[in-house]
Length: 168
Image 1: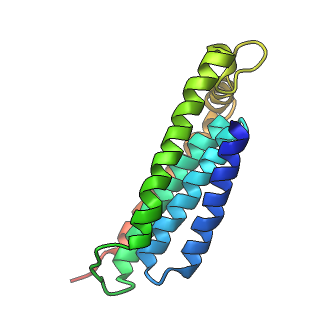
Image 2: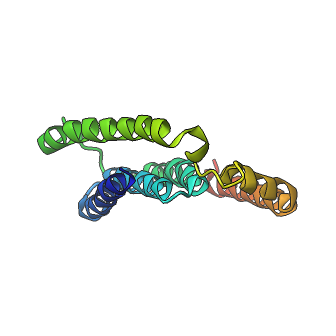
Image 3: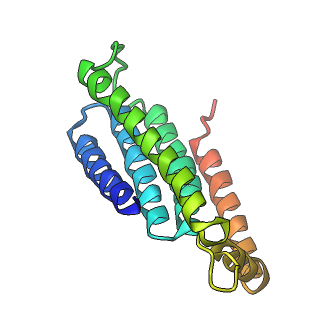
């Protein structure tokens, strides 16, 4: 079942990347990039890298895409065109979403019942998950670089706000 999810989301990732290149509107391209990032997160999850999948969703699909969308809106890269949507998107999109949602639901229910809870979610042989081990290392051994990185990001955000401010 995980192979089926991998193949489906790999195809979705490639189609999203092609759609990203073929779109004329920068906002639609950014939304296609979100599809690519979320597809990559599911691919990471199917490969057993749960932390990387969560980081992909939080950092790239969340924060970076909000930043891209903000920059596109700030630059006013194109004139807004109101459309009712593509008929192809309705014809392919709605059944596609239903199929993927049902496949994901079946996978979650089936995997939990056949493998047991201890084997699901990247559990190691001793019953400790990947997330637990990574968080221990991140917040004990690497706490100082983690905090320095967060301060550097805060300084970069403040610098961007100062540079983007309009003087009257």
